[in-house]
Length: 162
Image: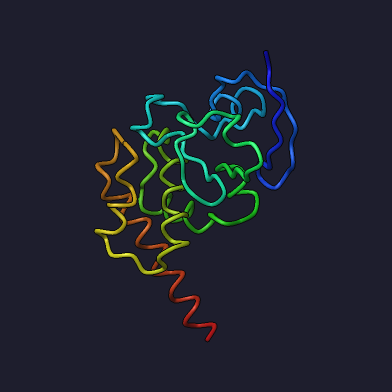
């Protein structure tokens, strides 16, 4: 038996009928074709499936689609489309923090959430914010460098505007 849900995904209000056991990650990928939400461990350990649920990063593999009913979901596609992460994407490219790219969307969602809360994080803060993300390729230093670079650039832009 399917359950009707209403939620907002990347600014668009949606109504759907879903199986009660369908994960939010599977709903986003299979029903909405938002494939930037990757499935890795499906246990909430790797962070490849991170999305923002009403502004908070969550592992979409651990959230049921029915639990997201009435809430705002923002995926990597939504963040990119509204221009919220262009500077992060640029820094990831410049600092060679991409490697295979499988974890990148989750890393960028985590970084975006961190920088929204703390405009000038220390490297330890960045590492702490990434503690729910797993990368097999980069060794994390390039990712930390990219996020730190973005924070410094954003701070310089704010200071220049003042």
